Amino acid sequence: VQVVESGGGLVQPGGSLRLSCAASGILFSIANMGWYRQAPGKERELVVGITRSGSTNYADSVKGRFTISRDNAKNTVYLQMNSLKVEDTAIYYCKVGGIYWGQGIQVTVSS
Image (cartoon, rainbow, N blue to C red):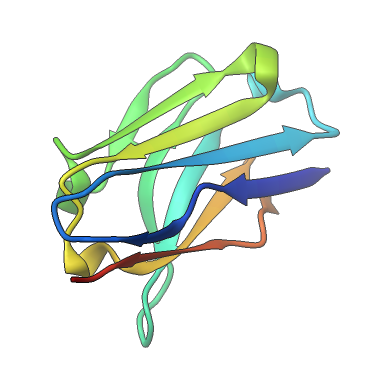
């Protein structure tokens, strides 16, 4: 199974980014997916999860700002991040099927 994140980078506070996570080697349509993040000196935390049926679970800190979506035809899950804050700065990881991790991608929010 291969999991590859893309779309990270540097953005100013209040800006937006969209992360993508492409998975291969797994029956994507039935897999639960999740975005996690780890800031320097902190533990990895769940940002949002989405089940195969489309149910979502957002961390309180990102509710109303982040949106997860999935395209089963493209084996890809997305994380649209709006109104970004400095405290959103972290390495973002995609988790597929509850066990497979991507390599992580840096998101930096700074002026």
